[in-house]
Amino acid sequence: MNAARHILTLARFGCKVAASQPRTQLRRLQSTYVKPATGVNPAYDEAVKIIDAYAAKKAAEAKAAAAELAQAQSLGSANDEQISALKQKWFDLAVEAEINDPEVLWSAKQDKYDLTRPVFLHLREQAWHGRPLEILMQRLLQMFVLPDLLDPRDVGTPSAQLNIALSANPQDVLEPGSIIDPSEAREQPEIELVKFHEDSRLHTLVMVDLDEPLETQQTFREQFHWVVANLPFSKSQSKANIADGLTLLPYVPPHPARGTPNHRYAFVVFEQGENGSNRLESVEVSRDSVLRSFAAQHDLRPAGISFFRASWNESVDDVYRDVLQQTPPNYGVAPTPRSEIGPDGRKINVYENY
Image (cartoon, rainbow, N blue to C red; front, side, top):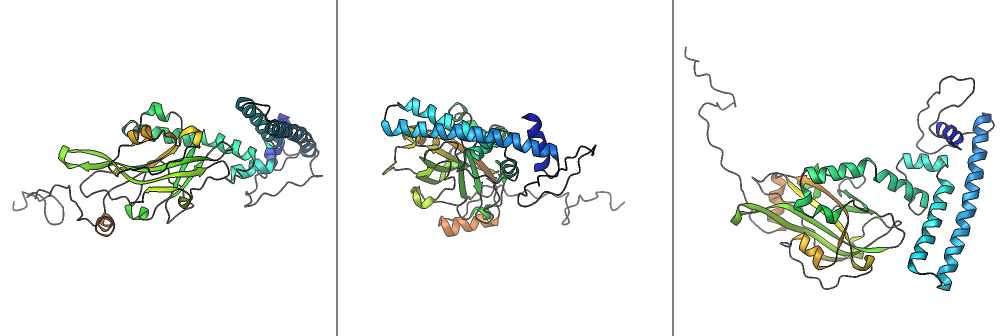
């Protein structure tokens, strides 16, 4: 099986596999998958037979597991734990049936996932638990989003992949901790939560600025920018449709005040209580809320988290005037004139007259 898989892998990436060739020749990858021709290389043809036989066997077992699951659900003869075990059995067999398919592996390599199929859900989760999750956790801790925002013990390892894309470039997902121009987030971002479970559950989205100045105490505080409850997410429904949820606080664009350092804008998607079945109704929340208290009060469990950073530029003053109806604040200290620096920014030569 391993040898057959190796041969198929070479073919999948456009490598010619021939006994007479001591080295493989790579061809440019295609934009769409092209199945290698059979009848050219006997080793490849034999590998295909082995893989196809194994896939057919596992597909039959998956079909039988699906029938067993359907029967248990219709008769009501199994408890929740047994139903869960049967679902996992079917899922694992369905993955095994397609995990060696060259087209499936090629599609995953191209980041083309059909999350309605168990094999793609499995491969997407594998990809997420690799480098992307490592980078996310590293930046959350290095930039003190955790523990400033939430207790790291409550967050643990996020169970879902939260992707943020700015409305100007909805296809480009922001890396955690990216620095953006505030004007790029004038419109509410696109939110995607990739969940690795089958059933649909309700979630609450919260956007928080961790670095809003609190002038009276000469420190910083949290400020809520956006809160939407009752958003459904599942393996087949990863894009957030804000209209489907209950908007508790409408979106306010980032507005890092002049004279303040980079602001961290965190996005957290919480799974709502009772395994995502509890709906939030008539919830009162202010922009001065504290996220830890808000989550505890409404039985919210962190599922996905990400963030970006932004600092002041002239576009921020427009947000204060047009959206917040406020005079733009200025926390900056007026620069002290330096007598040794000339108008051109260069240091004056005190010995120029000698």
